[in-house]
Length: 131
Image (cartoon, rainbow, N blue to C red):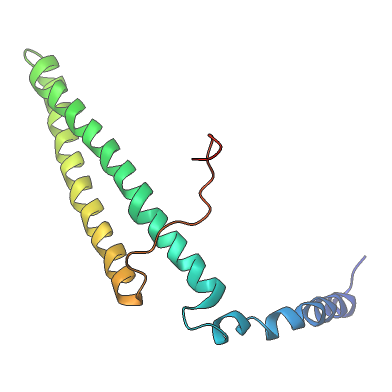
């Protein structure tokens, strides 16, 4: 159906059609001191991770930690298998806390180094109008 020559023509046509977009890809960065659209995107991504994702993951980790303590002390009182499961869950939750805090530090380091510290999210969708 398609031979190598026709596929080459299709590829050249695609590249030629997207060439104006490719050549003006740096336009937003060159005209603005704060990074333009890419700077806004980077700011929103970093703020979203820092303000929403990481605290949510810490909350989930805290729930796992509490569940592990419950399994170790309450359910594992007479059951050694449940006690071991609770112990490993507490260890994994603690390791998760350490990794999350390290990741949070890396995000804050990137935010501070790039000059995006103190930025807020823009255009946050809301369920309630006017909030």
